[in-house]
Length: 261
Image 1: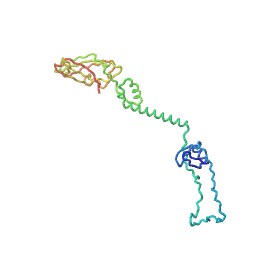
Image 2: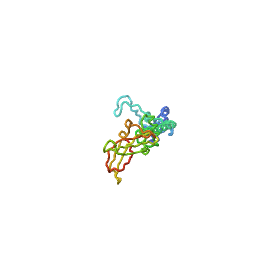
Image 3: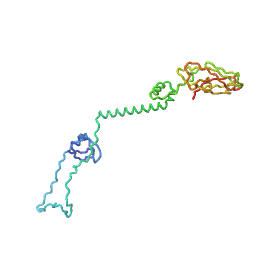
Image 4: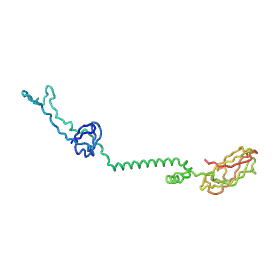
């Protein structure tokens, strides 16, 4: 059977076994293009010999002898005629997967892509969990993530939910040039949170700040209290500590809370 390339019209001899093994697809050895032999009309080629010219009556010379010895003008041993179509000049094209297999491959690649995006998202959330934990709407999901991975979220902080139910500043009865500070803190948030940094500012009659001090939990909590523990919910915490007297210009004071780094 002969097959003609539809692209460059090169002609090749192929066998049915070769076509079956390649699924009917072949690659042209001339133009290197792949085509389906089922769409190309097979060509049966019959070799015909070119008729000899009529011999002249007086031309009765015998043909050149072929005796294996060199002649004066040509090759002694005449090579056996080789059919140029005897060797196929095509390569079997890789068989294409059936449509169902291609569909399954596409589905698998899509699923792997979605899985990869999901994994990258989880890694990002894991690395940024401290910042994302500040958003109340994300904290439940982050808590579940840490339950699975063993990570820890920073404690929730709501300074506005810390109430100062009582406060007082007066001259220390035993220490000269010192003031005694007493106060009561209550965590009104629905969750425990770290103790804040307590700031006390003093101002004069014009409202200008003349003195300011910031005190860490270890400085204002009662002796024996753990400054690294969390404030319990709804439980009053009594404070009592000493500060330096800012002077007679300090006529008013104000308490404020700041995040504890």
